[in-house]
Image 1 (cartoon, helix red, strand yellow):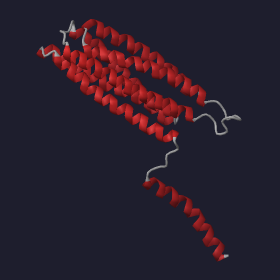
Image 2 (tube, one colour):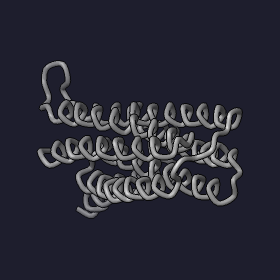
Image 3 (cartoon, helix red, strand yellow):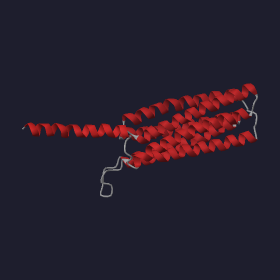
Image 4 (cartoon, helix red, strand yellow):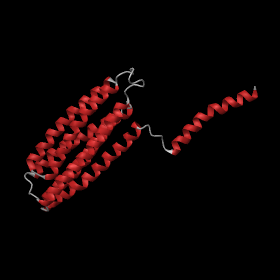
Length: 232
């Protein structure tokens, strides 16, 4: 569990660095999509903080009030992360709408793209590490945080493509169109995280096929015992 706490703290540090770099990219270009991308990174910082609190709480041993421990705190944290992803998607859609109504030319798009690529590469590497660590250590919070960062990578890639196309074509509203399309992808990711962890919180049963395998595995020892008792 100590490794999980360290990874959660490192995630917060990475999120802060990426947030600063993305706001720099926005300041260099003034593009609405890059601004939306930076807003989404604010949620990354919030989710990293939530993950740290949840991991520490989940590590507590069982007590009189929680006889089965505090492990479900991680699922609750992951559900909160999913909700934050959804809010980030809605914020991006709002900025895209404003950018469509009032398109503005970009300043220093090449430099802004270069800075954005650095932030995206850092996010991609860390999101892969988080997802892998979450699966290895069976931490729902770390895996959800990693998926959130991966959705941020998708967002950033779309935003950077939009900035490049706007700079090449001069079609200013294309920036807002790309941002809106990417926001839909982020929204799907958030809803997926919410659905997956809400089921775990509610002790949802596995799918029918999974239940059949469980029933068969439980019935096998009983059948073996019955045959032994009859033969004896």
